[in-house]
Each structure stands twice: as structure tokens, then as C-alpha cells.
Image (cartoon, rainbow, N blue to C red; front, top):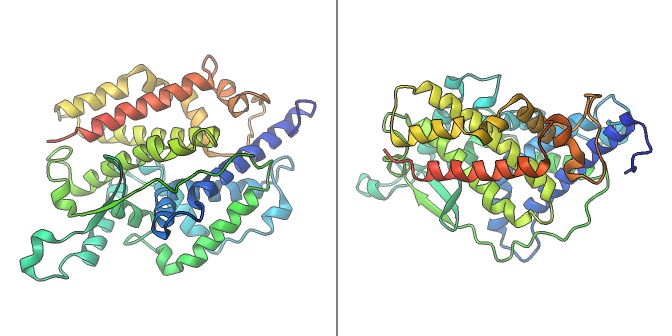
Length: 367
């Protein structure tokens, strides 16, 4: 990494590559724990971080293939394979929830309805009718009292019931392609010199539930099951960003900031779509949602400048020649460059505070 003596174009390219290396190093650290942990925890960590893993693998491949000589790395790009690029791209789009311009509100809910039907078909009706009260169709993962994942959300992200799944394509083959991509992306810049995250004393237990019973009184009674599952996914993702990622924050502060920013942005834009679709509902929780969306921190996060920060957290190549990175500043001064008047510290504080407020609303939302 240069110290500023290079041309602005070269510096933008070096910073872009470094952001990619940092993110790839972080996600590998999160998904490949040390040998002291159980295999079940290894699998759980990968499943919890699928949205970030696929985003980094996809966006990183785009960056390495760039024709911009300051960004692209042809020798590394030549080593990439794209046999499962369609699966990776679909999973990346799923992480956008209702912020995906390629899908309508009803399209997103249809995906959730499809995975519910798929999982019910897999797990219900396999016992005698007498055993119905004890049947389960979904697993919950928790850290303390916080839900951090559901098997239905994981099944959706793996493509079960909504198209070619990772399982159909061959789990090992897909994972190998992602692993190779991330390993190459870690070589794009200077790998961070930080200790590995210690997962040896970090339990993430599973609990089996029946979705219909679990969400019976959660959220609004008029919400369809697929919308309730979507809100449960948002709660889980926000809890992952606030609890699981916190364990890596001191070692991978900037990648965690970028992951939290992207997660919260998509969650807020999705909440806005839901609130707009149920304008007639005046319950306490719906009122709290409207107040959250109207709050000053959320207005800043969802502003044009806030979206600029989200874009810098999601995409690696810096094509805007007006952006001048600054070596030595958090995230190389990119927040300050695309959001005049704000600082990385201010924006990060907004992200954490709003995520906690959002979680508080979702956890206490009962009809």
C-alpha cells in the first residue's frame, strides 16, 4: 500500500484491492474456526455467514475481472472458476431482501412461501397423526436469548424449493469454488496481521420448533406466514451482526462495519416496504416501526449519501474519480468522501444504535 505518492487512480485501485483482501480474510476467519471447535459449530458458522460469504465471493470476482488495470488482477482472475456463478449470484441477491430491484414485494414473499412448503414437506407428516403436537419443521439457533438463525432461512439461501439448490449442484463442489475465490481474493492486497477469532467457548445451540406455532402471536395477526418468516430472518441477521460479529470486531473492525452497514440498510428498506404495504395498521409495534423509519439516524442511513456509504461497503472497485481515499483513516476515509459532513465514527454509531433499536422492536412485536 502506498502512502499517497501514487496517482489518485492508482491509490483508488490499491484501496479497492485492500478492502477486498480485508473482507475475504474476515469471512474466512469467521467460517473456518480453529481445530478446537466441534464440526457442528463449523457448519453453523458457515450457514450464519452465507449472505456475507456469497456477497464477498461474487463482488470479489467482479473486482478481480475488472478491466481497470488499477483494480483487476488478470492472473488471479484466470484462476477463478464460475461453474456455480448462477447460484452465487442468486444467493447474493437474496441477501438484499426487498431492496432487490429485480424482484417485486410479492416475488420476495413467494420465495419465502416456497421454502416454507419445501421444509414442511420435508419434516411434517412423517410421524403418526397422534404425534402432531410434537412435530417440528424449523430449527432455531440462538446466542444467549437472541435468535441468530433459522433453518428455513438457511434453506431459502441454499435454494431449496426456489430453484437449483446448493445440494443439487453438489455442496462440496460449490463450497470449493467459493473457497478458491476467497483464497485468491485474500491475495489481492496486504492480508491483515491479526489473531484468529476464538470460537472454542462460543455455543450456538439449536431448538426445534413448529413455525406455525412459533409465530402464531408474533408480529401482526394479519401478516401471512411468509412475511412473518421474513421478519424473523431480519431479526436473526441483525442479531448476528450485533452478537456473533462482535466477537471479531477488535480483529476485523472495518469488515464488521461494512457487513453491519449492508445488513442494516437492506433490513430498513425492507421494513419500509412492509410498513407502506400496511398503512392501515395502527398497532403499537407498527407505530414504533414508523417512528424508527422517521428518526434522524435512519433518515441519514437511508439518504442518498447513506446509500453511497452502503455502496462502498458492498462493491469494491472505486470508479468515481471524485473520491480521494486517505491512508490512515478508518476505511481509508471513504465514509467522509461520499458522505460530506459525516465521519466514520458517526456513521458507525448510527448503524449500531439503529440496529439495536430495530432488534428491540422485532423481539417485542406480538399481536
